[in-house]
Structure formats: C-alpha cells, structure tokens
Length: 295
Image (cartoon, rainbow, N blue to C red; front, side, top):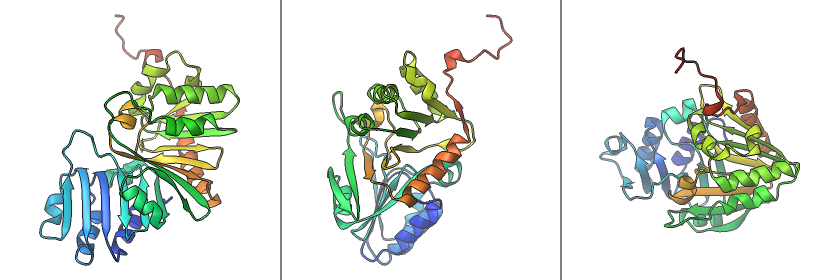
C-alpha cells in the first residue's frame, strides 16, 4: 500500500523488462501516459481502457497498443501488470484528479502465479510469500448474481472488528451481514462518500446498522472500496458494494490475509484520516429543512 501511488506506478512501468499490461476504467494522467509511451520503445505495452479524453493523442506515433472498450459491461478495473510477476491494483483511476483529490487505496503484489491468475481473469487462491490472496474477477451476469457471497463469507466470520471505507454501499445482503455482525458483538464502523449517500439511505431505512455508518466531511472524495476485518484480512479492489458494481461491471476483487504489520499500519493511517473527517450518517429525509418556505 502506497501513499505516493503515481510515482510508484510510473516507476513500475519504467522498470519493465518484458511487457506492460494495463486494465483501467479512466486514464488521463499525462505523467503515466508519458511513462507508457517511453517504455513502449523497449517492451510491448498494451492498454485496455473505458474512458480517456487524451490517451489517443498522447500515444499517437508510439508503440503503445490501445483497446478502447465499448461493450455493454463497463471495464471498471484499475490494475497494472508488469513483467509476468508484478500486479498493482486498487480503487484509483489513473487521472490527476484521482491522485490529488480522492482517497484511494493502491496495493502492490508480486508473484508469477498471481500475475497469471489476475491477468487472465481466473478465479482462485494463491500463496504469495506468507500470505494468501483470493482473487475474484467479476463480470456482468444476466440474472440476480451472488458475487456478494465472496464478501459476506468473511464478514460472517468476523470476530472482533469490521472497518469499511466505501465509495458506494447499497447491497442489501452485505448490509444485512454487517448488521448481524454488529448484533453478535463485532465492532462495525462504515465510512461512505457523501455524494453516494442516497444509494445507502434507500436500503437502510429500517435497519439498525445505520447507527454504525458515517459520511465524509472533507473535500477529498472517498473513492476507496476496502474493508479490514479483525486487523488481519483486507478486502479491496475496484468494486463498489452495490448490485451494479458486483453484477454488471468488469471488476477485480481481492482478499489478502493475513496482513503484515506494515500493511495494517498503512491501512490504519488511511482509516485515521477518514475517521477524522467524517460525521454520523444522516439520511436526507431526517435532515432539518434549511428552506424558509413553510410549504
């Protein structure tokens, strides 16, 4: 986990000796695109993207291969692959706004088996050193999907604490699992982004879990999609915990365990910032009117 992701991403790209593959929802960072262009003179560079206003122009005449996705299922991933062994993934888009104005989480992982699994969208569990990584590539499903079970499985097994920092949270099954965890004595705290609060309030109107939900107060947008369970399990990736995110997009979902002391420290630094910049969640229908009108 890195506090200066753009430098880490550019360094990883420029260190490539075999190939670079990027699967990204939105890319416009000139610094990152410049690194891709430079490295394309040395190794194959492929970019699969959903949105960009400038990548075609900035890569014109270079050896960068572009694949602009235009299918119905949105490519919402944010994952970089380097040299058959390095995987960098998280919640941040490769845009200047994302790096400077949003709160995101980026994780760097090494392992040839993990690289093969994630780059080919193969579900599975792999050992990286003394840790295990569950990887779930999510794709569009035609009917009511059950991809949420990859998350609720760990929530249901929580013993002491569940800390959630989520841009958008509205999946009723996940919220019900969080409520049950709270009822059995697990410390549950959820921080969401203010801009997406309407999605949450539609679901929790009659749920007690609402007292455990907080919303952003700082200018920085909460764009993370992360959950830390019992200080040892980290669920992260590109997917918002909504039915759309879990069942309609192309997403990457990771579960990393057990966390190292350094990894936990990095997460807790992010969590501390969010805790210092949030307030108890207040649904719009409970907020006092600021209008002077009596009607």
